[in-house]
Image: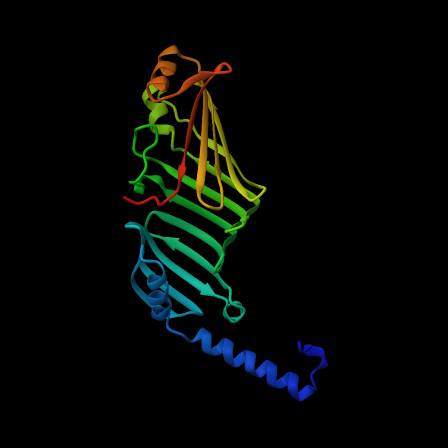
Length: 257
């Protein structure tokens, strides 16, 4: 039988509040090193060089994931959320591949971010290439809310920008080729729509990722110069509906080397 807080006698309410405060205080005083040990035990790809402080205000130095050095991370964890079985923390990351500032919420089945501004150095990616070339540049995420779970995703005001194509574009025209677009969640599937243009033409990249991490990528290009078209065809682009199109499918397994 469930107990309604309002139905408790005054002494019972006071005791319950005192118990909650005790649990929260106890959880908050746990050393950050314990959290680092637990996180690494549950994620073999994660390494943390050093941890200081407590769960209330922790600092993790030399954080790496799958041999990508993310940097130093500070986290101000909300202990009351831990009591409810949810990790909620305001984080900052700097000094590595990831520069970020925002709030994360983590449960056994869901990862969410709120008011998140993050920039990732694409040059640290080793496992994948982009049309035969190593990734370069950065990718930025600015999101009011983005949630990923086993049942799908939810998003609100999530925008991605990247200059990943700049190095290739500058070889052809001497100018960059920035891409920008929203992250949308439709029927639980995460869809990233990137678009950009320059004096050389226009391009779009659409990526769909399902909860099982299987993905589909469709890239379309409308180059203005014939030699650029020929180069893209060497990369596997094929003429379709007046554009050059490239499609890839697979499963995301990680971004490290």
